[in-house]
Image (cartoon, rainbow, N blue to C red):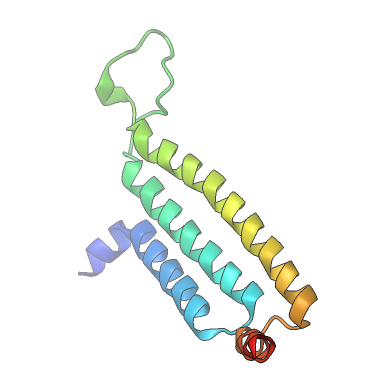
Length: 124
């Protein structure tokens, strides 16, 4: 088991990072910490996808010296998914931070429980 663990250390690190992000997302009440937890989870998924797409000894999928043999290059699809995911993640993070700022300006706290309590008081 130890040999497989060290041979696949990228996947293990990705799973540990995902667990850290998930527990941060679930256990903290602060909105900024929840956003950080979600970003850690995103990074873990990107690391996992990038590690699955990499093949030892192969080159980036850029044709040089007229070499068009597929066995020379890695698969470009995981890299494209990671790049697309990063762009989406930055956009979602910016939106979440903007909404968090709006919540802070309205309720003067970043604690999710306090925001819920204050919003219920306003509704009455």
